[in-house]
Structure formats: C-alpha cells, structure tokens
Image (cartoon, rainbow, N blue to C red; front, side, top):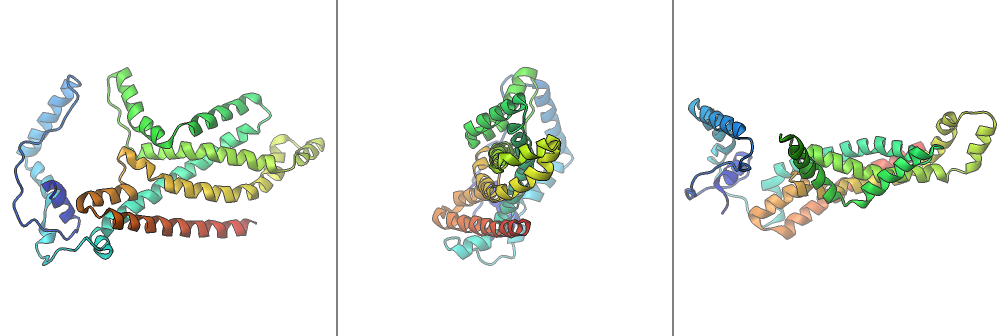
Length: 301
C-alpha cells in the first residue's frame, strides 16, 4: 500500500507492479506556502495552475508521469523478497542513483583538488597572512560535521538570504551537496599538500635559494615534483573517503545511490537485502576506482 501517484510513477518507470484495486480518495491536494509570504507569487501560482488545467497541459503532465500503460501487458509481478527480484525490479533506479553518486564524487573531488592545493600552498607560504588564512580555513571546515555543513548550505544560506532580502533563493540539492563535499575534502587535501611539501628535506629549498633560484621556481621545479609522489597515495585515499561521504548528503534529499535504496526499502521493507545490495555496489565501485588510481600511481613513480 502506498500513495497512488508514487505507485503509478513507479509503474511508468518500468517497475512490474499492478494496481488491482482502485485508489482510495483522500481529499484535495494543495501546495503549502509560508503564511503571509509573497502573496503576489501565490496569486500568480494559482492563475498559472488554472491556466494549465484550462488548456489541458495539466492533464498531459499527469499522463506523462502517472500513466500505467507499461503495465498493461504485464502478466505477473516481480517478487521483491529475493535479491534477484529487487535488482530486476529496481535496477533502473539504482543505476540512476549510482550515476548521481559518481558525478557528485568526481565533480566535488575535482573542485576540492583545486581549492585544497591553493590552501595547501598558502600553508607553506613565506607570508604569514597566507598561512593564517589557510589555518583558519582548515580548522573551520574540519571542525564542522559534513552533514551540518550540507544542511547549512542547502537550508541555512537560503533562509538567511530570504531574511535579508525577502526573496526566496533556494539552492539546488546537487549544487549544495557538491559545495559541501568540495569544501570538506579541500580542507583535508590542504593538509595533505602541506605535509607532502614539508616532507621534502628543507635543505633542498635552502640549496636552491642559495644558488639564486626564485622561491616560485624552486617550488615548481624541485619541491613539488618530489612532494607529489609522496601525496598521491593520500589523494587516492581521500577520493575513496569523498565517494563514501556522498551517502551523508542524502540528508538534504539528494537522491543518490544510498537515498535511492532508502526509497525502495520504504516500499517493500526489505532492508537487509537492499542494504546488502548497496554495500556490494559501493564495494565494487570503490575497489575498481582504487585499483585504477594505484595503476596511475605506479606510472607516475
């Protein structure tokens, strides 16, 4: 038993479900809005909805997302009490969630690499002001749990902007998740960069500077090439952590792989089997990416 629109949408997405009995009417459905807020927008919304119903577009939208034609030629439902049944009936949703997870992890880690290297270089700069800026950034971001950081970006910042301007400025859940993961990983990458550079014997910097070579050229030609080899294993490890951290941003409603599994469990209550499937998904993906990264590491060495 579930909400009729949810079941119809699942059927339209290819799930082998049936609706053998008519849905039970539950009354009118409405959109909730903050009382006393933006009355002109509410008026525009009501007019827009009325126009959609009048010109038939509203019914077209319902037919597009809630049509159940795909189930009309189905002779049987799939038993979701087995692992194979769960996969057979939900593989499209799981693959979609996996795609979002990978996109989120790769994009946020690429951004984190750039930000982390910048602040990592700041942390070993001869200028005290840059070192202080880097230290503040690392301490603040590492001191805030990722879930709170994601919630602050997704809900907190738009609420603050609305309180200041009176205008709603929602942030897309994927964008909020990317920002949160990027900042979180960047703080740790900055420390990896700092540690890698400081692991190179200080005498090499002194010898290069005594020969009249500039600080920037010494870093580019002598220090960073050696430090990169030391940092690479830690980068691989940080990427694995970032990939697993994508499960945390499901708290803001982003439907990645973990959230997809939770939605499926809410329908069939097969939590043991579904979480086992998710664990295998993550294990396979992380293992493959780790092996790929290690091959890249060997080539660089």
